[in-house]
Image 1 (cartoon, rainbow, N blue to C red):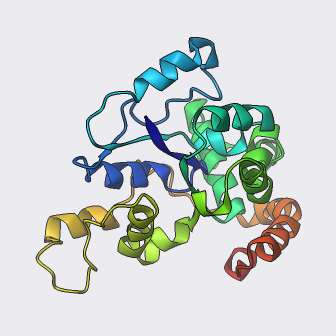
Image 2: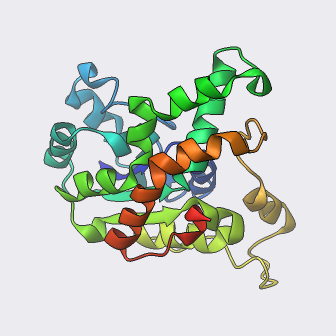
Length: 245
């Protein structure tokens, strides 16, 4: 049975999280690997195919980690809920301006371009594309999933916490999944976390272009996201002032 979904966001640490959850292979399994993309791309395979993918009774929690799921339309989320009403959901979010920049750089590289040579106009067009706007509209994504799932079924995490305290970040994930964490605090001196594991926790996954966000692009991103960030802060009761800095 499918037990949990990591629904996104794209470019917000899901590849890193996938690798770290897989370390807990005795308790956690991803039968379809990372990014099954059933609900957004491959529904034609049929729900029986998807259900069977997670049907092996091996005593482990079965998950699907596909960042595109955060922005699924309501009717698809409703269908998912009809099949799996008791899912635990994980949604990791990131400064939407940095997320949009990271995603745009990735797409530019995939298109065979060098990031440094891509004009601002191309990036701004990418930021304003339907896909980028949907992926960065965290509040709408959360509201849509909570139309069908209970609030306690959804764990919302921040990408920035991976950089500051990866052990705490993972601990919240394990707790949400009903598992004991396999990671000890890095500064505890515990033998449970050896030097190799510590290095792995601090390592970025699939690191792409390191070129920082161009100052010339900030006004366009602020225009798109400042209002959304303030609204999200009020909706969740959390301070996202660092995203507005």
